[in-house]
Amino acid sequence: MIYELKNRDFKKIEHLLSGDFINLGIKAVIQEFNPGWVFVDNPEKPQTAVIWSKGICGFYFVGDDKNANFNNSINYYIDKEISPRAKDLGLNSFEFSGTTLEWENTLEGIFHNRDIYKSKQFVYKYKNLKERTLGEIPLHSDYSVKTVNHELLNSNFANLDFIRSVILEWWDSEEDFLEKGIGFCILHGQEIVSSCISSFVTENSMEPFIVTLENYRKKGLAKKAASEFLKYCKNNGYEHDWDCMEENFGSRALAESLGYDKVFEYSLYRFELNKKNS
Image: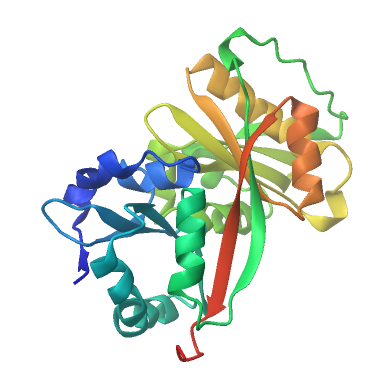
């Protein structure tokens, strides 16, 4: 059997978060900073769990990968319980990853009858942020930096829908984001053209999500917004993670140019929800 936990019970699986590939997105849901769902083998003493994160619209498998009761039930549970909810949110695929190399082998076995697409994710960390000196990123006089706060979201700046849509990709509401996260945006005159906001937040870490309008790319705006985010984390005692797809060369290059180090990579899997399990 598989059970869904209430939010107040998410911390019951904290003891399972010991894999090699535990990224910030997992901790952010369990600590109830970011929205998500948690499904377990036992609601009182869970040994295996799958965590859904709204931000990435994906699932993480944690705990005992040899749990036969859980592993034998998950395909049915996905088809009968998770798939309808995912489709209600506009999702057409089940995207997932493990948190150890053993989990990756197990997942490939569990879903061997599915048509699975496999890719790689890279995770970077800014090491020793407290001790590092952060250089100032220059910005042309046509541009300015603003903090994403109540004042900005209620201003008359052009393109507010851009920053609002970015926030709601990761958070249930603007208020939720403003309470728990932080963000910075770049304006060209009175128009918002680039942003860097907290995608995931935990008690001591933050992860950025950066978007720049197409006509304003390759001008150093993303790097400037990200550097403001880094300075905030340094000044407020947050560690800083960065997660991106292997083929997102722009994101990887930006992370490395800012001084991040790659700390691990993990496999990401996906199968279509409209296809029946063979």
